[in-house]
Length: 115
Image (tube, rainbow, N blue to C red):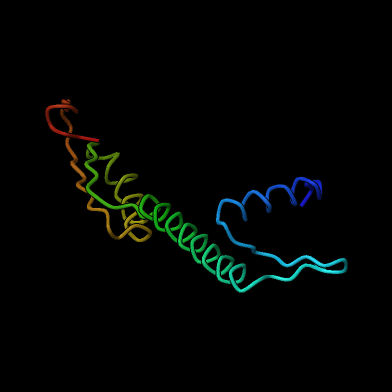
């Protein structure tokens, strides 16, 4: 662990005092978990697994790209470049709705809600 044995012993003693129960039976040769120690260890492992699962779920919430994307481009550029790019993007991200607005006029990005 890279932690001095004295520190581990002190932290364990602090935890046992906090819980008001013995977690480990110590002998000169080995340490053995008590019943309370086994139960506490199992509960802590379950909690840590739930935390890992919650973190994976939270990360996944941002990993999936979804929603609407509005893109404006000139007609020729859009047909030559944007349509193939949009098609490839949609294959990888089917939950995205792309509105490709092609036109040869100046577009007000804010008023027309263009991304």
